[in-house]
Length: 420
Image 1 (cartoon, rainbow, N blue to C red):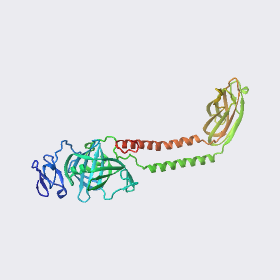
Image 2 (cartoon, rainbow, N blue to C red):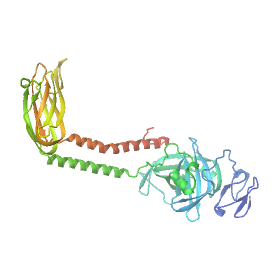
Image 3 (cartoon, rainbow, N blue to C red):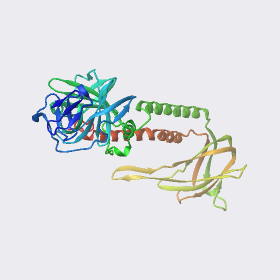
Image 4 (tube, rainbow, N blue to C red):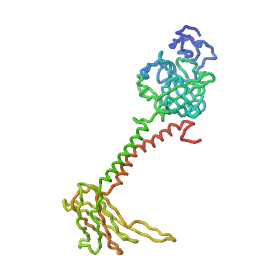
């Protein structure tokens, strides 16, 4: 190798390369032949000729803005994990005042990564499983060794030898990650944060279509929600309490009143095959009416159509009811099914004077029944329907979140959702 602080001549093809990183650059690839070599210790044994070639989605030399800081892409590498042989891409970024950082891309998912000075604190003394940093708990996602499959550009360290010599661990607390590279003589901790393809494209002012398409879920990709789990739980509990209090207040404010109670017999049926109740008054502007029927049946049935008729307006409210009750003894054990009672509820009945026309069908065994009509009965059915509707979204959200997490951890050997 020959040259000065700003240029270096490749000993392999004699191309003169401009060194953009100047004294900070310790290794680079030749712009002519693509050979990787270390500056200051050039020899053929130290150079690497990569068999595979890959074009970076973000060109070396491009500049992008992250959190108001402009970084330049100094180098690009393709790394491969040694056990499962999956590959990902890393971009070395540099700013003269902020130092260096990295962009990591795997299956179209991006993480912006920067070195940190503090070492995260192991939780429970087990650094291999969980660590604490900035009041967040990170769980181990993967441990691996890797090799460099391809490199282009300049590096402030021997990226090939360093990658071969380091053991890596990555911990996640989406959208954040912690990564540690550990060798026999050094330990480097970094923190990362998930970036969308749109954010990367905007940072470098390039079309989104130029970036690799997303596949699956990124291991630090957050769920796309505008709220936190704690906020959803707090809001849901608040709404449940409000609905419960409203039900209690409504139940206490309504006064249940029996407005009719009478017995009926088939013998009283007129020529129109109907029974007519006595008239009764319903108080209040608007409320419900509950009809309770009782037929003294044994192994028999009773059916009737009912018409509640307003004597003031002539409006009719119709319903029907079927009552069956059967019982017996079989194999020495008694059994029964059905009931001798039935209930019907009509909502939104205005106050006024009413009577009921009844069109019954009797069996040959029983010809009597009774009916009680009650005004302003507490309607817990609506209460439980409201509770169910309020719970649909939280239940859906947490089921979906679990499915997302199961999918996220499917590529990890340390998934909390799968036992060995």
